[in-house]
Image 1 (tube, rainbow, N blue to C red):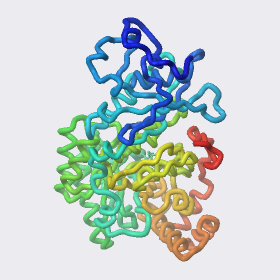
Image 2: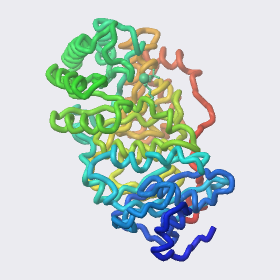
Image 3: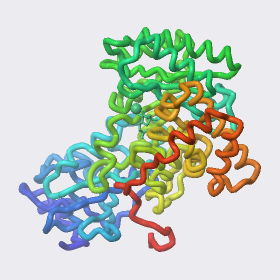
Image 4: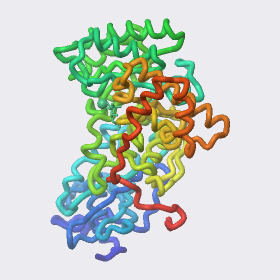
Length: 486
Ligand SMILES: O=C(COP(=O)(O)O)[C@H](O)[C@H](O)COP(=O)(O)O
Ligand SMILES: [Mg+2]
């Protein structure tokens, strides 16, 4: 197609009928994005015979003002301004027929502070558009003017640490297992044992809400009794993430209020409740001085495959805007998908005040977070004490390490599992702070600590052969940063 199509006269451009999206003005290779534009980067796989520029223009059109045919009512609007502009397409390295398309959106297309509104455009109709075989939203650049219309994390990492009086090490947690079936009383016993054994937090699993075997009030009462007793026994601030996910906002507010009444410092929600419900809960958490934990239940249905869906880095950006305090963001070494470089990109999006573009980590844009609070990533899913050095190496210090099976499955019981993890963590941080090469010597550091800590010895023996070495489904396309011309 003609890449630099001459502007059409108004009579031709608005004549009734069907014309290419590029001709309708959605492909503008000379466009220079404004500082206030929202920019989206899509990975597009056009159908055979569809030019990448036309495919990019179609994505711009269908995610902003266009439909399949010319409409004269465009001329009742400031349509030049409102039209999204595809301004660049680059071939994806080593993937013939696949392209990165950059699209700029005028800020006025979006309501202030609404993830629902943003997403209804950016991932609305367009993902089903027939001329594309597949479409993936890889990254977004959110202008400061837009970022500032969002609340951001209700509490943030610094205030959470102040409330917990815990500095200089990752926070330690455990997900109660089995996920389903325990009675309130037995559930509370698990929480008490784990907290007394040395964890900072326990947490409900994503699918524990209010089932016949344990209604939510029962769980909250037993859990908070366990928290109070464990805090008294250890002198440490303890907590448990009470999952308030429910069928309606009214139910969620009722559960969250009760958690607060019982003295909980934190509540939890699942990603499946939806963007508006998440934003409502984030505002509730800010008003009520509560930490808000988000489990990303459901995300892999649309984040995991490289050619179609939405990258988790974009979900992480939306959730930082929306205002949760914690977000599950992967472990690298555990049982669930997580390439090291890609995961590093997610963690940077959560924790940095300013993200530098880093193609090596899948981060395509500089992003200023404009003083929105930092978001604490949570590493969870098939991790155990024997991986402590790798966890610290890949994930750093401002992270919640959550061992579910890796606490509750300890051969000597839950408190022993918690103790093993706490000792492993403190031994590793101590070695790191003393200047040891803790990554290389990690196994030795753990073995040494285990000489005076039987629970750690048992944990290392039990899980020593457990690894999850499978090929990643979502590694970055660019490896050494230097080899890429921007
Ligand atoms: O129950 C668990 C982990 O339990 P365990 O520690 O026993 O494996 C969490 O739901 C997953 O970590 C979620 O995955 P992600 O954190 O990747 O969203
Ligand atoms: Mg779970």
